[in-house]
Length: 356
Image 1 (cartoon, rainbow, N blue to C red):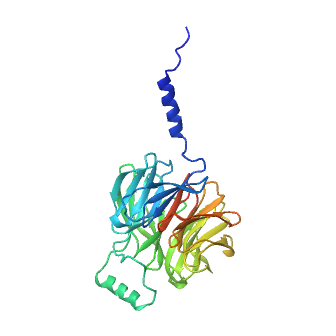
Image 2 (tube, rainbow, N blue to C red; image 1 turned 135 degrees about the vertical axis):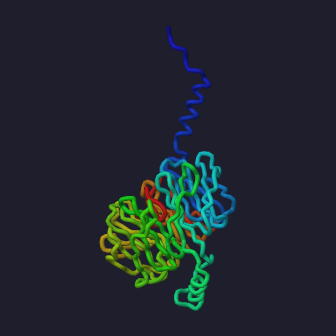
Image 3 (cartoon, helix red, strand yellow; image 1 turned 60 degrees about the horizontal axis):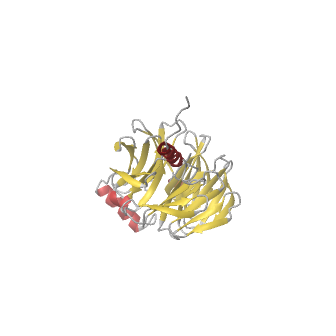
């Protein structure tokens, strides 16, 4: 007896399931947080903006994607929460209260780590050494203002489960090679602090004030044997060994911000916010080997998943700059953004806000 042929409806459902299981874009998608708008999506085949995710006009900054590509999480500065987006429907499915001024986001496994700043005054910081800077320091001391913290969010249950106390105005977040420690940059304290993730205990403090003011970005090398951090108001790039000892300090261009290694770890890339270039260093000796022109106040950047291009979010020129990763030549300017702050991709790739 011959088996019955599949019902047409079952065939249609199977086909639809296959389509839904496929990635929307063969080369992947970039997600861009626009501080004066929402999150926009860029097709990494055409380098065209193909969509917008409405997070409620909350001035998005840090963002990250889960490893399975199902969720996008976004720090919403104006509402003090973490927005969770279902990437299949592009709809907000949860808003998780974090605290005042959430900014930097890292996603690891089923957890999101989000820096927030109860004492942040908002707006650009006063010039180091100025009367305004001294007055702000005194105000914080008089009012016993709270240091920044890193919220740990369980994405499975959609709740903040713990907090780690950082310094004043904690910015960048990185993890140790063994996965047990978190390293953060504390802008207003001019230091890096290392904490045990499980207990929140402070393990180490690295003073960066000899090299300038306001440490910003921090990244671990792909082999886990070193870290680099940028000193914004010092124009310095600092390298630390696996034990967090400073081993080398070199000059950068004007106002270094986001930083990342390439996939093979041979190069370090630094976005110069006021220098309007992406500066490239040899990771072995921190020799500056190239500068790629970008835009105005470019804070964060990412490689594409195939490592062939670099996309840079340029906040003051309202565009995303696409570069050829091998040559640094300009490929395209995607000029429809609204003060873009952060950028990540799926599939996940190397960049100033994420790693695969």
